[in-house]
Image (cartoon, rainbow, N blue to C red; front, side, top):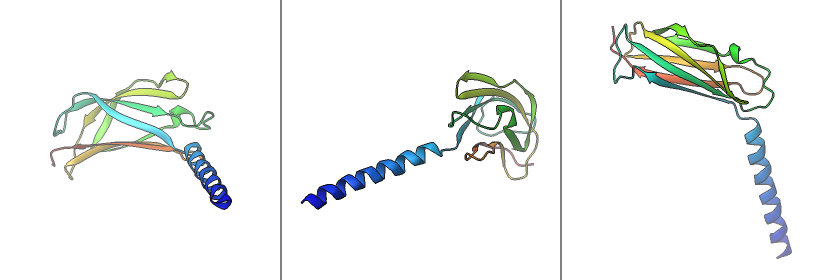
Length: 131
């Protein structure tokens, strides 16, 4: 019976250590949402306004917020606000995006942060009329 109690304590401590270590190595969270111009299906020439929200998960991130990279498929940025710090760990930026063209019936934007602490990735995919 004494061994069962000891094993239970070891198991609980081990699980706690595993969960705690997983929380510290989590990547930045990047959310992209449409603020204006949302539709079911987009066409070339449509304009949307999106908000990109980056939540840093490490207190001392070695990568500046301006180093967040964007890639796009079937769309282009027409204008953008500067990054605005909403809290110690949260940054936001708005992008004015024009749908240009696509062959696949889908367009999208990706936001990528690369660093030695896991970085971060966010994506928004939209249905669009194929050219």
